[in-house]
Image (cartoon, rainbow, N blue to C red; front, side, top):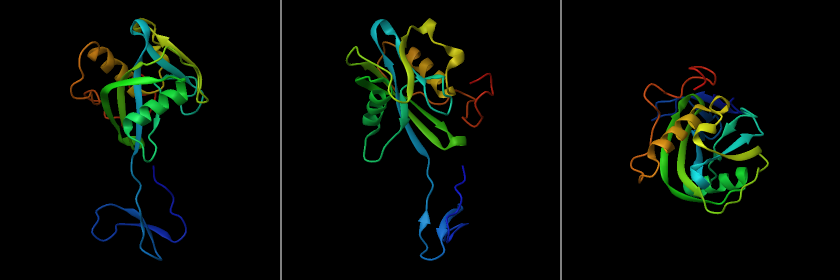
Length: 187
């Protein structure tokens, strides 16, 4: 996404750089636009069921997702994933490790998805969720998942079930993250 130039800023390649940036014409300040980091978790509850949230906000309101969101300044990615689980699902989680790293360049995101379990058997919809539920694998509403990376993370979680985590999963082969929702059979 290209950010419009504020007054006194122009788009140009600063000296010593190789990309167009917003540069202040008065003082030379360079306003860098960097990717957003999304943090979240595949959270396992009782009997191997997975915690999903039905989104109450756009994009993809009404669709199911993992508890996840933008990382805040001055927090670790693990703390951000735990915060998002508490904010969106009222869930206190225990993080096991990094499950996946997904690159979604078309929307300038890097997603860090952790494997976690419910530390307490309590959860409830937060302000960004219409409802929160635990799903058995066969009951996951696959056609109602909000984003391709939710599909990817759930499959990575299933593949790693019961095993120590090694290197995190990455975008599946051929999945660059550079297509819009609804293309490639909804993935």
